[in-house]
Length: 504
Image 1 (cartoon, rainbow, N blue to C red):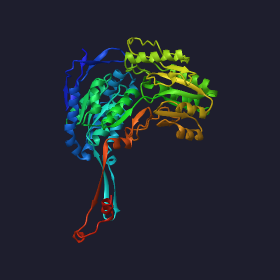
Image 2: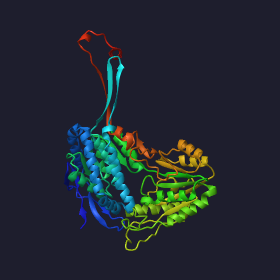
Image 3: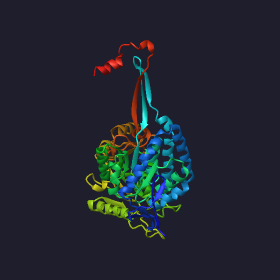
Image 4: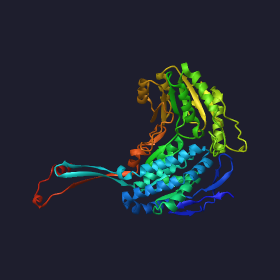
């Protein structure tokens, strides 16, 4: 039987009264594994209220206690890595190594949150003026919400969003992806059953956009983290900010790399193929465009095509699979449509991944590695995000032409250069618009101890997720100025601080 999933409010699992459900499929078989509830507005509001009710007690819990609970939570996650890996692999379509990476990055983000006793520290200055001391504290704010995408159901919901928020004393409502909710729900079960956090600290719903709108406008919500398309991200940013919320909106990408004539071609090809086709291209840091100097372009393309052909397409949770499935049949069709468009625009299709059939898994959502060469600047296939295993090759004559071509793109999540030249590496670092930069690195995602710094239309907000930005996003600064004096000063004259204030 297909399992009907529930939503969780105040530690209690409930069936939605809406009667509406989203299909959750096994991406490798096409079979429906479960149905996720489409929560009503009142059920979403109930989750927000539960988080608001839990906030006073949780925020008053000593930070050392919260840190100890995060350490315990990390241990629980580690005990369930294999179980969660299989869930990610089934509902998203990632191979085992990629799915395990999703779960382990969740653990890494939790480890960052374990450092909250240090990260939340403020700063102070004694004798800032005669007889006055000032100290800055970082305090929790209230209820935060996260709107998670399908592609990293463990890391994004339970890594990027929740750990830092609750470690700093806030409470949370997570809207799990309607397409891949099973991983987030299973982690929520572990959180409720084993972690020992107070009820209502984290609450989980699944719902449509209409119901999710409440997460952007509700009076109790202090901030929103969103990951998804740029169109929706703009709306989230505009709506939530207009209602006084803090916003982190992480959006689309068209990550480019520049391959210089002096690069190690063999190594560059290997790194590019892994970056472009890992997770079936369903990640915002996938390398989607290769900008290569003409004198080595043919040699590089030949190596990329040769290595891409070796990527075994198959059932995501089989051990020999290198390239798994797309998340849904609709996602697969969207990539097919982009391939058709690239052909119509005149791009040269040098490797076609359409029509892949996996024995015994004929209904899976598979696409093989696909490569377009000689893509011109005006072709949309080279400028818009294609969320699948499609790699674009653009040819240029020089470094300057290459960097200009890359920077002309509206997105700037990440960028990379492959070169043996320190000069070009330094020039690239300074001139690229990419927020995360790789030097001979194809996926320049920093560890969780640094922020995920997308730029331009890849991000809307002021403070990025993770790192020190993450702490600042989930806390509010409070400055306290004090002055103490004994009885001998009861007839004192105004000091410079008070005198200065009184003159304003």
